[in-house]
Length: 292
Image (cartoon, rainbow, N blue to C red; front, side, top):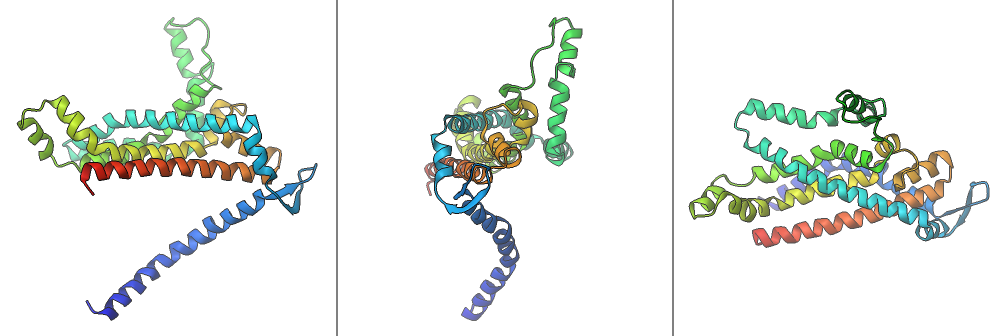
């Protein structure tokens, strides 16, 4: 290929990338910069934004026991959700990959992604219908005589985690199914032909090759759970010590926009740092397994 044709191909590639880059610049980079600037503004006693700048908002975020506790709880809930989703995703991904019938595989994929086609608000209200004191679960348990009075299944962190797992599970299944699908079918058979049992083959051949898919799913679920506020607000209530709820309250109820911006950016930076660390571990594992 001549140098001129290579240059033309490169220019055409940049031409194709231009609309997407401009869209990201207009609706992601610019709002991010404006959010940073807003977080550095001071406010007066009436929470009006002043033209002066300082680090007062960030000092309040990282010196307030309430916000530090909310950040820690948010990260813990997001991490627990990621672990539960990965554990529950493995059997589902295994079934998707090993289903021989193409029709049944299509049906399973439709069932898997169908929750993603439903509004998060609708899914959340469906959980309220199930978990409320006069909801379906308490009604069934009372009719069966298993409980005498309704259980407090709603407005607590356990309900939030259950709803999180149901909403985020497809994001863990799909990367894991991709990793399982990339394993050559002859590899487990070769392991068993050399005398390894099914358990040994799974633990020493299949499982190590699917760690990258598990890590990818965990990163996606962790990031989505850490930044979600609709589900915990409607199912857990506004008193749950989660940072997204605190951001919602500061932005829309108290109208302290600089503090809300500082909380948002703090959560973004911490979440991105943890995701980057998980991604680094994933790449190190891939180098160890694949040798590159």
